[in-house]
Amino acid sequence: MGPNQRKLISLQKWLITYQLSLALLVVMLISAVWIGSGYFDLKKYQKHSNDMIMNSNRLMLQQEVNRIIHYISYVRKNQANDSVAIERILNFLADYRMPYGGYIFINKADGKALIFDGKRVWNKSIVDMKDVDGKNLYLMELDAYNNPDGGFMEYKFQKMGSSKVSDKISFVKGYHDFEWMIGAGNYLDDLNLSHNLFYHFFQLHFFKRLFQIALVLFVVFGLVYIVSRRANRKAQKVVDDLMSYVDSRLLGAERKSSGQMNLVLKEIDQFLFRFDTLVDKKLLLEEDQKNYAQKLETMVLQRTDELEKQAAILNEKNKDLESFNYSVSHDLKTPLRALVHYSEFLNLDLKGKVTGEQKFMIDEIHKQSKKMMRLIEDLLRFSSTSGRKLQKETIDMYLLFESIINESIPQERALDYSIKIEPLPKIQGDYALIKQVVINLVSNAFKFSKNAELPSVEVGFRRQSSHIVYFIIDNGVGFSEETATKIFDIFYQSNPDLGNEGTGIGLAIVKRIVEKHLGFVYAKSEGQGAEIGFGLPIFDFVP
Image 1 (tube, rainbow, N blue to C red):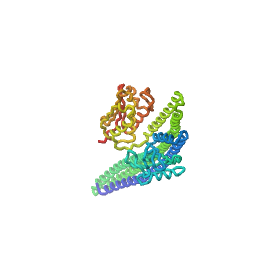
Image 2: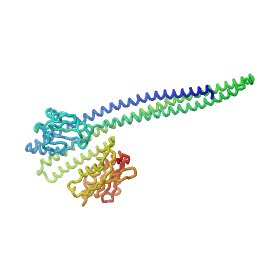
Image 3: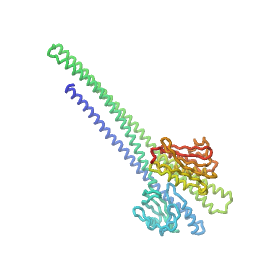
Image 4: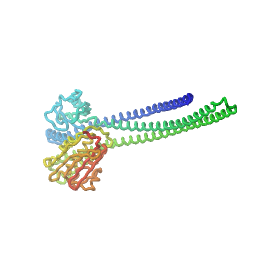
């Protein structure tokens, strides 16, 4: 290979490298602008969602306090004296729970606490109570008490049962006839749903666009590489043939006649003609490649538009779902709460004045209203598990089962139960969701075994291929083999003859949460007693 030939090849390689580098730079700039535009759109979406959630939460807290004040006024009006009314009000509100983990509290204007952390308290003062930033909570409540319209409080406090410090918001309003400061509040991180939605949609848009860009780069660079290699091979062969031919012809040029020289020149002309033809073909191939790249880009843009339209439709559906959940939470539960409260008022106010049949109807209204509220709450919990992003942490399954069993065991037969909990391995998972799974399984075991002569509940675990399986066994009524395949279906009740305590959603929630953790559920029974369990991936196992 001569020096001229090597220079020609080096020039060709340099040109190809320059073209590829320039194309890569242009695509990267366009990609950065494209991805960045999606990020700013999602930022706007996050701000809108945060504002909507905070405004809804403030309105809910204000309505809850006004509803409690209306209830206090009603009870006071219908009681013989204020002492009886105060005792009845405090007993009722101590057992009352707000939705979404909220809480109510009642303190006197002199700083004495009446209801604190959902329980009645005596001899407790909040005069010197401060948050982690040093804000005096009593003075903040007193300012709201002196305001006829009430006021909001924002402070930082440590969650019960957790070492985490969280932002809290409360609404406080005074009931001056009793000198009470009445408040309702909740933790803001329990409401921060839009943060998860933001990152979910950002990842969706980012990886979708990244995949499309990578696909275009792969196809374009692949075509450039294939065409360039084929053209270079043909050009190299032509150059080699030319150089060999010229060397062989010119080696004995002095000994050959002018006729032979003319023949050489003629053949060189033929070669140059063929070389021009190859160059023309290469230009045609480059033009075809450019046209194909433009068609491909058009197809990608069309597909991108379709995906963006689908994303917009999905966004609208998510907004509709949020509106539906808000409607269920407020518009449906509010009249049900009224039915529960008014049926309790009737039982108290008409005690001894109604017939047995009337008493039965009032009790049935109260019972069915509370069952409907449980059904609505279970349906909301069932629908919310799909959209929730997992927040994994280390969970001590032994302590979790132990605490839930101690809280859920039927008090009337607590001494009759035989409880056995094996040492259980820790696991990585979403604590709130796994806790809901344990609550539903333990409640199910107690519900069906409480009528046994010697009731028992056993909790254990085993390794099964790539999963850690946790199970709970009871000696209750059990179920048939055919029922085992339906027991995790929504609204299915295996033993409806035992009463209507459940809603038929508890085990369906268990199945959805476990499958969200890439696990599985199972149930088996031999007619007497039952074993229900769930398996979580072994890669989440904590040794």
